[in-house]
Every structure is written in C-alpha cells, then in structure tokens.
Length: 338
Image (cartoon, rainbow, N blue to C red):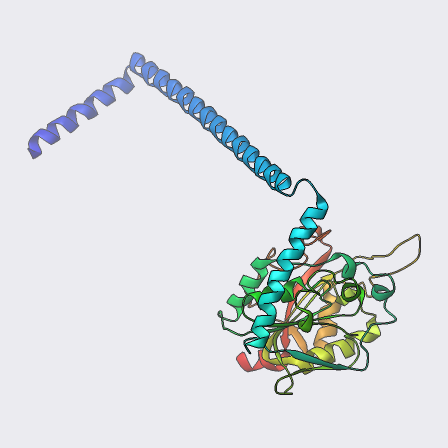
C-alpha cells in the first residue's frame, strides 16, 4: 500500500514538472489561473449583491416597524405623551412599593442653599431643561468596575432629568441626583415625577449633607458622577464642590466626570454657560491640588460613558476633541493599592 502511494506521488510530481517545462502546459496553467480569477471576482460580486439586498431588506423592516409603532399611537404626539405618562406611573408605583417594603432607602438632604440662584443654568436653563441622559452600557461598565457588587450607592451631580438615577434604582441600586436648577422640579421633567424622593435641587458648590431618613446616618457613595457639569462651575467654586465630593465619597470610591473644553454662550444675549473652559492638563492639575488623581485602571471604553460619547441630545463624541472623560480617585486610595 505504501509503495503504491509513493508511485502515485512520483507520477504526479513528474507530470507537474513536465507541465511546467512544457510551454503549452504553462499556457494551460495561466489560462486556468485566469479562469479562477474570473470565478473569484464573480463570486465576490454575487456576495456583495446578496449583502446589499439583505441590508435593504433589513432597512425596510425597520422602517415598517417604525411606521407600525407610529400608527399604533394614531400618529398623535399627544397619544405618545399619554402612553409615556402611563409608563412613568407604573414605574413610580414600583418605586413607592420598594420604599414602603424597606427595599429602597430614602435620602434626606441638608443644605442652606436649595438652589443655585446665581447660576446661568438656573436663570437661563439649557441642560436642566433638555437633558435626561440614559446609557445602559454605562451602567453595565459601572457594575463591572465594582465586580457586580449589589447595593451600589451612586451620587449624580447636576442630574438634570435624573435618567441615570432612575435606571440605577431600577437595577436595584441606591442613587441620588442633585440639580442646581429648579426647572425639572417645577415642570416635573424627566424622572422628577417618577422617583421624587431621590432627586433634589441643591447648589452643589455650597455645603450640603445627605443622610438616611431611616437611620439618620450620613450616606457615603461608591461612585460620584458629573456629566457636562464641571465646565459650568466658576473657577473659584471648584474647590468647595470637590470638598463636597470628598465628604460624600466612600473609601476607595470613584469620581467619574465628562468635561467639555469648548466655549458655550449665546452671542445674542451674552449669557455664558461654560464658565471654566480649560484643557485636560489644567483640570488634572486642579484635581491633584485638591487631592484627586486620575486612575486609568477602570472598565470604561471611549463610548461607554453617559455623556461625551454621542449618547445624549447634541452630545459630543470622543473623536470631536470637544472634551474628555476622567476617572478620579483620592490620592490616598491609589497610594494604598500601589
């Protein structure tokens, strides 16, 4: 058997050498290669056509589904608002049931400054009026950061509509939102009518304290966030704001910010919303001066943040070079781990 295989192999090799040495054989090989190229090209064209048709069919399905959804609401924006109101009612019902059962603690805010009265974001609201940012991908990365530990405590500064706070509570965690403007409270915008006992108006640059209504104990948070907020703070108010962060951050906790680095103002009225426009290097130096340093050992990718990743209305993206994300920790906490 082995001898037969060897003889066959030798004959094949001899035929191949003869074919190559023979001009006619080389021509046959060249023709075969040309035919193979043609067949490969035709196969590629066919595959491209199939993918194009599949993409077109998928688009048609999406458009058809969107149209069915619109027709289900009768094409009436008031009907959509009615359905949204019903959904918020059902969410609030579950929220209040969790409070009554003791599953969800209720915070209490202590402050002498319940409103950022001199802020243009209060006098001429923009973000508080329009934003209710939600990014469930951010939530998942946050849970990974804490090894999916239950009962996380998160404080969101400048929370606008409170979307982040509501989604964290929906996931079984404890969250509180503070907003300097009273626009969302007065207009019951976003989640202010859904989770009313976990959203508060407060000047976050003035002293405040959060405690448990049940025990009276101060609340310390595993993570404190601020999305497109820091650039709205006058430079001389950054230090007291970070003092509040330090007072409410649990040992080993994380501070997660997105910070815009471009001017934002209304040329017609002269109203300026971005009060501190500085590059990342300036902010890092300021945070270091106040006891916080960047820590890149986290779970967030460029598009995983709540803001500054194209997730919100008019939101910038990482490639726009319009701002940056930063994860901070206390110098002492980072030093203990190194």
